[in-house]
Image (tube, rainbow, N blue to C red; front, side):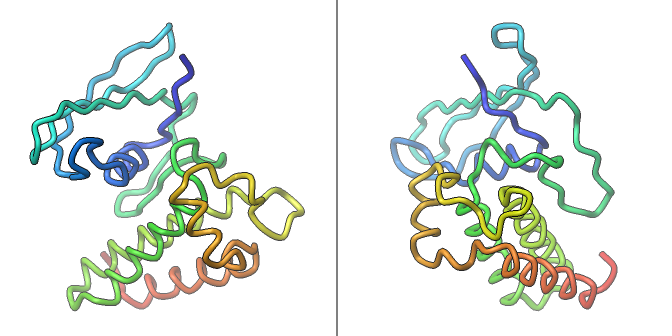
Amino acid sequence: MVLPAARTRDEAHLYLDLHPCDRCLSVSTTWDSVLTSVDGVPARRYAGVCADCGTGREYLFALPEHAAGTRPGTVHFGGSQPSELLDPGEWLLVADLTAEAAAATTDPAEAAESTGIALAAMVEILKFVPAGADAVPADLFRTERGRTVYRQEPGRFRRRRLEIVRDAYRDALDRIGPR
């Protein structure tokens, strides 16, 4: 069994938040996690019970070979390689939702947190653009949700546009001030 790698705890938790209960579609689950091994591969097991319908839920993620370093107060989803858990369309959805949340709040701490997540999501999308390429290749959209986001506006996945949005989120975060 080949397990997808969760590069950081934040990436694993984001994945869990984006994948509702199969039975009732709720995301209300309190997750417990433990280190384990699957076929000799170090892994982390997330298990919980859906708060709405009582269905047991479980996910297994391989641990990364090298843990990604983070700075306190920053959002960081992984190292230099693209995510195995989320595709570029899912990352753009996360960026859009968190940027909207940042714009809607009057609380500077909430705005900073949401903008930081949006910025980190844009950084993740850029990891899917191959060196020398102008855009994320269409075949890297692995999920239905990701393909839907891509089909709605494929131009949003061009390198230059991604860089402009990333930089705008970075500038917005700088304007919000210290967190």
